[in-house]
Every structure is written in C-alpha cells, then in structure tokens.
Amino acid sequence: MTTYTSEIERPALIIRNAKWIVILGVIFSAIFCGCTTNPYTERSQLLLISENHEMKLGAQAYQQVLNDPNTKISTNPAETEPVQRVANRVIEAAKKSKYAQTAQKFNWEVSVIKDDKTKNAFALPGGKIAIYTGIFPMAKTEDGLAAIMGHEVVHALARHGAERMSHKLGAQAVLTGTQIALKGSDVGASNSRAIMQALGLGVEVGLILPYSREHESEADYVGLILAAQAGYDPRESVRVWQRMQQAGGQRPPEFMSTHPSHGTRINQLQRWMPEALQYYERAPKAPPTPDLPSF
Ligand SMILES: [Zn+2]
Image (tube, rainbow, N blue to C red; front, side, top):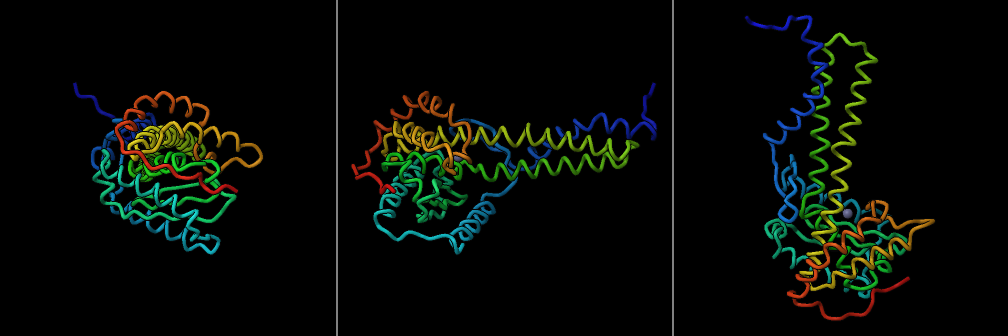
C-alpha cells in the first residue's frame, strides 16, 4: 500500500518539521561550503567566507579605525618600540606555528593607538594589530604584552571572525527557509511570529553565543603557546588577567568586557601552563627589557 500526504496535510507537516529545516540548513551549508578543523584544538569550524574576502574586510575595518579623527596614532618610541618588538617575535612564531600558511599570507601591520584610558587591543583578519596605550599597565612587561597580543593574533589566525560571520549567514539562511515554509501553512500570523522568535532565539543561544566562548578559550590556549614559542614567559599571562580583574569596578577594562568569563580563564591558563612552559623552555628567549610605560 502506498502512503501519501494530501495537499491539505502538507503545510502542517512542514510546521512540525521546522526544527529539521534548521538542522538540515546547517548540515547543507557545512557540506556545500567550507568546513575546517582547528589545528591545535581539533575543533570543527564552519567557514562560509573565503580567506581573501575576510582579509579584505579586516584591512577595511583597520583603515576605518586608523582614519577615525578620534584615533591618535602614537609615534613615541617609548610606546611603539616595545609593541613592535613583541609583534615581530609573535609574528615570527606564528609563521613557524601550525598556522604558518595563514601567517605567511597575512599583510601584518601593527599600530599603537595613543589612548591611555582605553585598556584594549585587537587583531583583525589579515594580521592588522592595534594596541591601545591604556592596556600597558595591564600588560606591565613585554611578556605580558605578548600574552595579550598572542591571544588577539590567534583570533585572526584561527579565523574566528569569519566563523562568527558564517554562523550569522547560516542562521539567516535557515530562518529565511523557515519563513518560506511557514508562509505556505495555515497557522495564524501570531503563531508564525512566535515560531520564528523561538527559532531565532534558539539559533542565537545555541549556535552563536557558545562559539564565542569557545573562541575565547581557543585564543587563550593557542595564544599562550604562541607567546611561549615567541620566547615570552607564559606565566605572565596569569598576572595580566589578575591585573585586569583588579582594574574592574567602576570602569572595567574594555578588553575584559569583550572577553567574558575571566573567572575560569585563570584556572584554564594554569591547567595549560605545563605544556606552554615546555614550548618556552625550547624557545630562544626574548632579551630582558624595562617595564612598559605606566600612566
Ligand atoms: Zn578574545
């Protein structure tokens, strides 16, 4: 006997299977577009954006920041030289790391932004690094600066930005698919909206947010190794986070507000420390330097 679904029943079937549309959408995007594995953590990554396109976006965003009339680029050697020194060693280490291929491709650029109040730093796709002078007291030493820079550079090397964009694109695609499916159904407009809201929330919480936390852990872990390979004492990273925590309160450091869960991150860093110290022992050490300028 042949079973079949009548024309009238079909829309209801689509509603029941809305969840499956979401799941299938994600599976299809993963199959037809890029899926890669992080070489350090073996975490699988969905990447729907090409590396070249991502690098172009990174360079554009970087120019926007640098060209902003409120941005003051430091030319003070006391501020620029330590940053350049650390960047040179971290970039060299990256070029010999498991990210060597990507690191070689990047058009690396480092800027120091003169802003003593902003405790922040970032690295954009393509290797565009910016360090705000306000983060110097948090970093305190070049070892500390290497911990911060290592973390930021890994976000760029591991293509975390492209991954976030890919999740947004994937989420949009499946939501559009569900919207089309709901349009052909007999559910009322308010029910349709409720389903869309629930799905939107599910995609947001289930897909986008947890990955951000994973990105942070991954950047902490690989950044710790990268700084150690560059010849900087990885133990300084723990002190950096402690200083960040102490600087909290009325105006917590920007770096911390964009980098959540600092409570567990110190524990994690300590857990990874024996491995990082092995890399540090093997690496040619960075020569001793005075502390960074303090304000
Ligand atoms: Zn981060």
